[in-house]
Picture 1 (cartoon, rainbow, N blue to C red):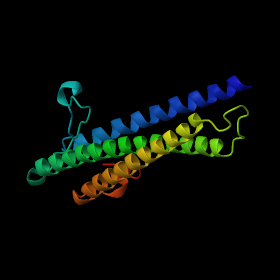
Picture 2: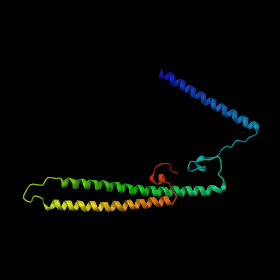
Picture 3: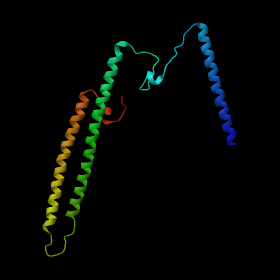
Length: 174
């Protein structure tokens, strides 16, 4: 049953392709009778357009060069800003994760039961807590500096004419 359905679909698609080819041949004959010349692209497409884009129309000469250069500059600068912002975002996220881990360790040590033994609370616990506090302060300062760098870079990108979606990597890209 399945093979019959497949055969019918193949037959219909072949028939429709034949119909399309026949109609195209008729259209070309009609154009020849009217004396209208059709544009034919001759040559090796790979040599004509190494980037893969072939156009049958030519752009207007006054805008062609300027627009293309300007768009490529914006695309390059948008990519530059976007990658720098994404790098800062990754660093910020990793530092935030480290800070969260350190704060959890500080909480765990604060609520830990005192160790039994001669010394009770040892000086190593106090040193450990102080060391964690210093690490947390150091990470908070780094986070503040990275966030300021990110904000400055984002503002610089906005001043250069880029849209927020282009800077964040969301929305339409040129």
